[in-house]
Amino acid sequence: MTAKPRASTDFAVMGKFAGLGSRYIGSMSTSPAPTEIAPKSQFSQLPPYTRSLLKVSLPVRVQLTEKKESVGDVIAIGPGTILSFTKKCDEPLELFVDNQLIAVGEAVKLGEKFGFRIHEMTLPSEHFYLVQRRKAAEEAQAATDDEAEESSEGEDASDAEE
Image (tube, rainbow, N blue to C red; front, side, top):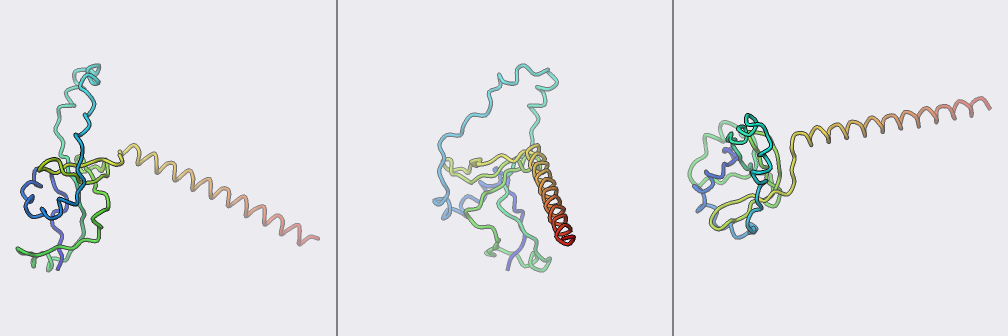
């Protein structure tokens, strides 16, 4: 039996379940000390009202996986229930900031705690850029296809005249 639990997990909540997954912790990669995020001096040139925005706290979460289940399956969940998902263990996890996907990566062990190593950033501006590039490529391909079709029709017409 399967059901949809809260698939995304805040780092703070993960500690609550640390004992449950101890047999899997050995398979997670260990990580060297995390790299330092941009130094504060980088933002010192910003106007005061902008710098205050840097102090706003946003929810950061790592999503393991998710799926939909029937109400009957959800009601049947109890202690000892094992939930099965289609996502493979070695597939990348997703990092969300305020419900916006910003990166993909893997879980790592930092001492006795979980961490997250980022493999690829997927910021919103990059999403729009990729969509624009894909659309431009599709339009260029369609134009090329149209030209090829027109030239083959022209050749067919000249062959018919002969």
